[in-house]
Structures are given as structure tokens and as C-alpha cells.
Length: 117
Image (cartoon, rainbow, N blue to C red; front, side):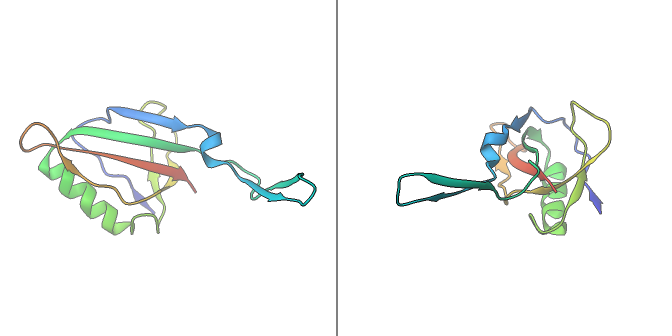
């Protein structure tokens, strides 16, 4: 399994999305106005939004290569929460993301979500 690459800067934001954002509930309305519900799965996976600013061109190339290597959300990889540290978590990218030119020439920024496997 691949490891998330080391970059020249730390993320400017790491925000855990609340479990409500990943609601596992399957809902089915009935003719009587009731609702039948059940959990689609039994465990709630954690998800984080990670934002970087001030990435160098080398960092941009490293992230682009890594995104291709893991096939966006196809393969899992090890990611260590920059504030919590500890054991790396097995995660996947939730979706592809854009590396945007930052307001300072030659630097880039990006924002992406990772979710536990």
C-alpha cells in the first residue's frame, strides 16, 4: 500500500466531517405516512477535508503523480493525520481534486477529502 507523500508545507486546514455528512441510513416511505429505516452499514467511517496552500511546483508534481498512482479513489493509501499523528490510517480519496495556482506566482493550493477504508 502506498504512503501519502511528504510535502514541503503542512496543511493549512484538516477538518473532520461530522458523521451526519456520511449518513448510513436507508429510508423507505410507506403508504401510511410512516418511514421504515435501517443502517446500510454498521460502522461509520471517518472523513477529513484537507487543504494545502503554498505548495511548490515540485509538491504539485508529487501530488499529481500520487493521484495517478492511487487511481484517484481506486486504491487505498496510508495517511497520517498531521495534528493527531500516531498510526497511519488506511484511506482513499473521495474524489479527484484540482491543484490551483495560488495568489503568489509559482505556488499552488488544493483541497481534498479522504475517507477511512
